Picture 1 (spheres, one colour):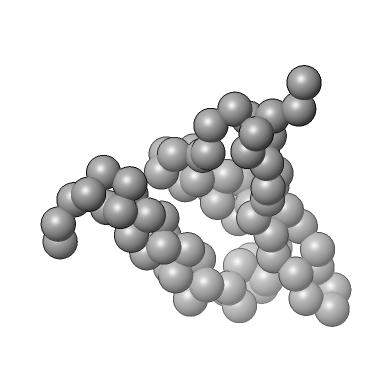
Picture 2 (picture 1 turned 90 degrees about the horizontal axis):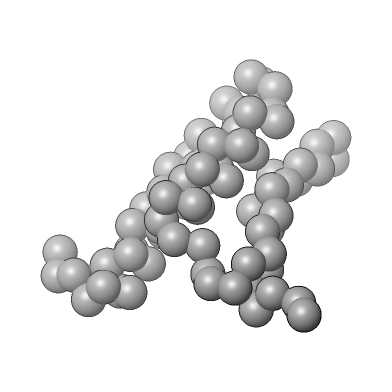
Length: 75
């Protein structure tokens, strides 16, 4: 039986195509998302990581917003 929740986070450019995928019964929680982001960052060179600093910060903000929505936490 296939898992209900699957996907991946990725970093792409003309010279890079790296990703970290998941397939599980429940959607990734905040901790899992941050762990996957860390694994993705480990796959990138320092130069490629530097290019994506802003996007990784946006991803952390997105995860935080999702957590607040899921648990109905007011800012």
